[in-house]
Length: 142
Image 1 (spheres, rainbow, N blue to C red):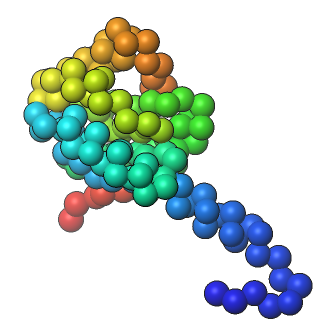
Image 2: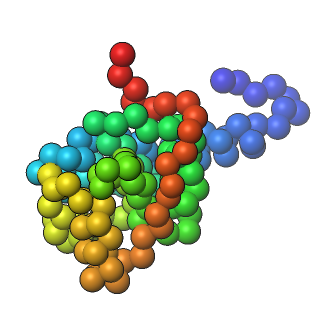
């Protein structure tokens, strides 16, 4: 992209920079090794320059507006999550790795969301809980 003389590209540059600081990954969050995988993804994305990382559950369709909401919520909280409706987690978002917290979660249990919230409370980690919302789907399967 080339700018012509007098063209204001600051908004375009800011949007590009903002997009580069956000990362989204799709991980199977009901697998017993999900905590280690999420930690690996978050560390890798932060090392690459992302400031906010959102993980969507590969087992579910996650509304695009929920992903956008999570990125915005990560401006105010270091950990956000959205329930999947059956005790599972549909989405996790982080601004830093939370290795100890993620390692304490039995990811293949039926009440993983409750386990995450209890573990976060025990470690004084604040969590912003997001409600599921409708909209264009991310990670939908055909």
